[in-house]
Image (tube, rainbow, N blue to C red):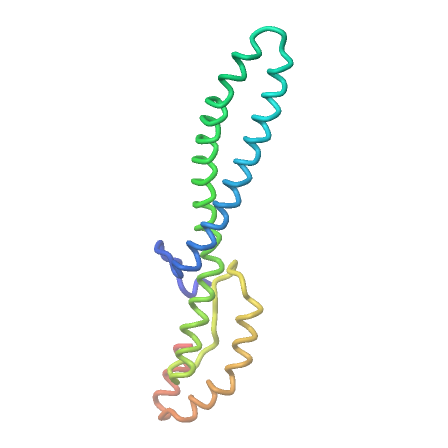
Length: 155
């Protein structure tokens, strides 16, 4: 059952972009460290070569930088796409919880909080429902009978 269909826009841009930037930064740092270690190892190997070792050492920085740029471009692109996809599973429920709790406080929510299957925080959603049940019941008693019945039917 798809209660609220996913949208293409960012739900919580601050949270999602911060997480994606963190993922991309870690991946980029890992790639940089790998390239530096590879450059160090190849330099030592070229220094041991009997003929042409100096030529290899002179060309290594260019090769390493080109490989680093390609690797960062691919990895950062993939990290952003995967990060966007995965952060929706976190940001969506947080967004839904905020709106649900505001509606409960405002007295306009009579049903239970629901999030999409596959989203994170399913247990938290159940806990929020348990914590807000008394307030939702109280809000239902304060409404006129017709409105209360209509809200029950829509939930």
